Image (cartoon, rainbow, N blue to C red):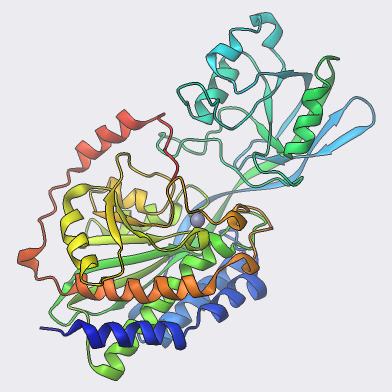
Length: 458
Ligand SMILES: [Zn+2]
């Protein structure tokens, strides 16, 4: 029987005083910078993480490459009349396009918006569409609304950024539950919220605009990094803690996701030092995984699941770390209910007021999704839901996602508490761990039923 009090004190103390979170973030964001998967910069991040795993004495640290379907954009612009040219940012995986047409305001692109516009007026036009949700209607996804525009004969769309400050950010216009999540329904570009508002105000005089995007799909290579802290009692049983190291095309990726990588590396470090200095090991093996190409439709985690599970037994649980600087740690959120009581009972012994909840919809927006799909119990951390989101991290997927917005003390707390939770879960005897009854076919049916629904704010 382990005595948790001194172990907890050791782990929290080491996570607090011995922290390397600052230097991980500085390396990833300041020295390496933008880490779009498939680039040389992403490769530097991969090597850095592998070195950190080795320094933490994780066994069998491997860099596991996979083929990457990537995309690059050379140029994008929107010309209004003869002499006005706007900088615009295409959606990820936007095809090349060169079209001219009148700009037409379609509101939120809801059925009631389109019903107001005669069919012949919408055909061949470039739509100005609000990507947010119409506040008084049953929400439908942005990809569904774009598909409706494409079906009505719209040739391209422009959408103002939902955040202010004359900025744009990388964005996706596909539903990652769909069969081909790279197939954009319509070429879409983003402009700033302010430029969008200005264009809307001048809608009464119809204007022809020309939209040009030069982009292409490219093949590349990205890698996942894997390292194990071998369990003393049940070494063949796995718990997984993961994060992704890649970023969108021009983001420094501090919150998304140097924060998650740094906390994962720290959790590995403190658990490894606990073993070396105090002689306490996890019961089952804890696997640490850093995924590539999360921002390009979860290609790293999808490749990992396809390669490993299968042949290897499924992890008992995987916890994914993403955007941890969004808020303080409030608990664990499971994708399936089976482990709720077990996880909650372990959290209770930590005496931190942390809660375990279950999502009513599968969350497709991160690397836990391929695991969920495979029938692996998976979880994310509860940082906020509707409330509790730090306002200064609302810069995701843009070059304003910088380390000055991170709260390092909160990240230290994440690492200490994750180490405590994972160590506890690793020592739950197999006979007390609920059997995995998740059926991938049933999960696929559930994903089908949930396809097209709007995910409630995390
Ligand atoms: Zn992310």
